[in-house]
Amino acid sequence: MEKLSVTIITRNEEKNIARCLESIKWADEIVVLDTNSTDRTVEICRKFTDRVFCVDWHGYGKQKNLCADRTSHNWVLNIDSDEEISPEGAEEIKAVLRNGPKHPVYQFPRKNFFAQRWVRHGGWYPDRISRLYDKTQVSFTEPQVHEKLVPDENAGSLQNPIRHYSFSGMEDYIERQNRYSTLYAREKMSQGFRPGWSHLALRPPVVFFKNYIIRQGFRDGFLGLFLAMAFAFYTFLKYAKTKSI
Image (cartoon, rainbow, N blue to C red):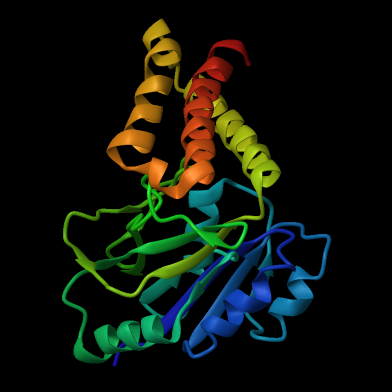
């Protein structure tokens, strides 16, 4: 059976991290890479593992690769501090490792919770995401935000979803989208990208139509409307900041 390392990057996650760590304590190794937490995050992590490292921030993808570099095993499960693996999901992962992985990377569906409510539509589920991988063949891209595992053309598929307790409410969502749009804009500007008027005027309504109508966000009621409109505004914001920052 392949041994498994779990990687987690953290910063001020004391409200989430214990739930996350409890759900993966069955793994052979847990490695945490913390960035200047000022709350009890590190203290809580050290109750579950002695593999806790503190480093400066280099961007989401770079942090996750730095964390994987500190693992002892080739197979890695990356999980965010506001996520958890269900008991059924744990058994499915163990079965893959026990039987011999057939793919270098595996995707999970992800159940996203917004203020304790599961968002079922509008592109929020199944929200497939690659998280289990062989670090000798696969690694994270290193943009400032929206990193992903590559290559992923030969990805396997698992059935049990990761549970993602993503946002505590509307204010939390808006604050984070504001931060992510700034990171996106700074990176795009450093690459010489400048948006046209079509990015500002056409893409936001297209994004709203796709998420609210085609992906049936309307079936989640007012929450679906809020999320579709908020993501359309995020789309506008990330391009607007690229013109103005």
